[in-house]
Image 1 (cartoon, helix red, strand yellow):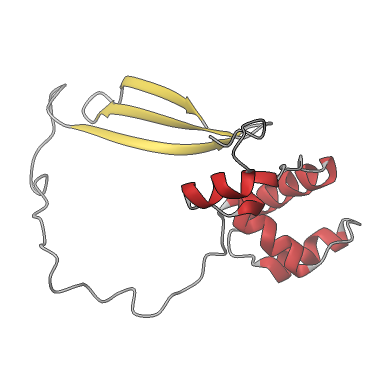
Image 2: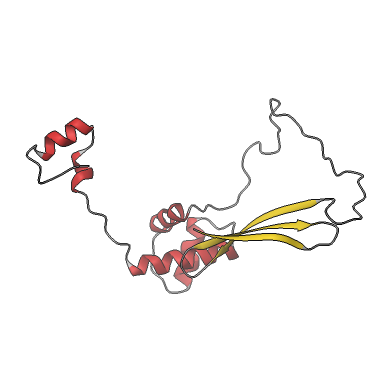
Length: 152
């Protein structure tokens, strides 16, 4: 998009495209290996203790001999898009504007294959990143009808 070898100055090209000049000159830095190891360990600890916030995770890491601050742990948690599980305000109140759908399986006797299917998706952490596993199940036979892995 921006051609530094063009006759038009970079400043003028940036103005015409309505971009900031810093975005043109910025070169992303690779994530340090120590941060990758720390991120992996935070993810593992979060799976073991989903209620733990940045402070508790920092304390657990310090007990393991890793010197790290709360803010750095919080930053890595944001990068991983994880947060501690805690009770939030007014979560039990329903929104009056939302329609309530009836539960169609109440009182239904499930006694033959292909009568009722269910689907579930789960997150599986891997050595490098994670994958999602989705499966379609038959309720009567408890068999997996279809499944798919998606790497992210």
